[in-house]
Length: 360
Ligand code: UD1
Ligand code: UDP
Figure 1: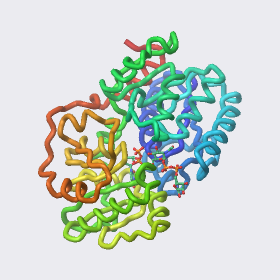
Figure 2: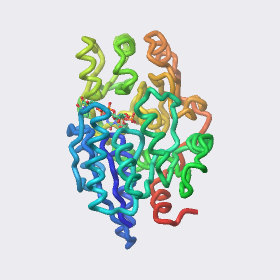
Figure 3: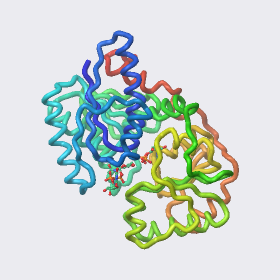
């Protein structure tokens, strides 16, 4: 079985790294599996890309498409054309795509037009906000996939409420759990403290979501809240390059916040497992806060990970300055009424069992 993996953005390296390790394990045990990795180039800085391949021992990509830093249409279109060339050349049995980025959609569209079966890891998630580029990407990717690998029961329900059974006669929906849990469990004992983090208690923060960065009003509120909070608490902010650029463009300043460059996954696992609280607009980090039992507030108006909110592990606070400050200060200790929301840490193994035709 030949699998072409299409990836390009930071969270995809982390998710695919886990599946890639499982594919390599199966190959070593004599199974007939080969992985060909296609890196679209969506993320390209060393600390947004190379570091994850090195740390997670992901095989070097077989194809580097170099399609980063463009408008959505140009990026997706150029990726589509280049991925199609690769698929025509490689003739895989399966194309694997992850999550909801432009790289996900381009990989899925290219495969779909060549009638190659698609495995979508992280299928069925919905924010119900069609203004998000990710919502469009994930709905279209789900629609053309054969294997819809859901991380949660909510995701399965979302697909059924959209009548997935009527989409394609070969579509299969499986709740395999979340590959990010597999990764967190595997790497938790390998975590490394970043050099430039202050001693003592700290709040971990990340911000990059377009709905925040594209709005001067929301960014002004968020940065204002961060400065207020950082006045008497340590706030560590590994800053996404998109956010760094936009903060400068809006003329905003991060006074006492400890801003660091984006870190690799081993540093990030240390940060989330050693912080006191998390504030973020990241999808992945909301779940990692739960994996490491850290209270989390989410700087968005909605989330795809609704089970965290229902269980009391996460609070949606949007981008209002006063709500952010009062929520982070009032958050108290971690509480959560549900366990095992994201499976048992064997998502990658289940995925490969399914695409190998051995699903139960
Ligand atoms: C993308 C995904 C988003 C995901 C995020 C993970 C889409 C539509 N969005 O958003 O769902 O949560 O990745 O981090 O696919 N940049 C650099 N260096 C890099 C990468 C980006 O400088 O290595 C800067 C460039 O100015 C670029 C901007 O960040 O234009 C935005 O990058 P892009 O990949 O378009 O979107 P993200 O915000 O990273
Ligand atoms: N992450 C990282 N270094 C950082 C910031 C985030 O390794 O400096 C990890 C984070 O722990 C999570 C993943 O990147 O595993 C989430 O990616 P991101 O927030 O970029 O995207 P999203 O999940 O929102 O799509």
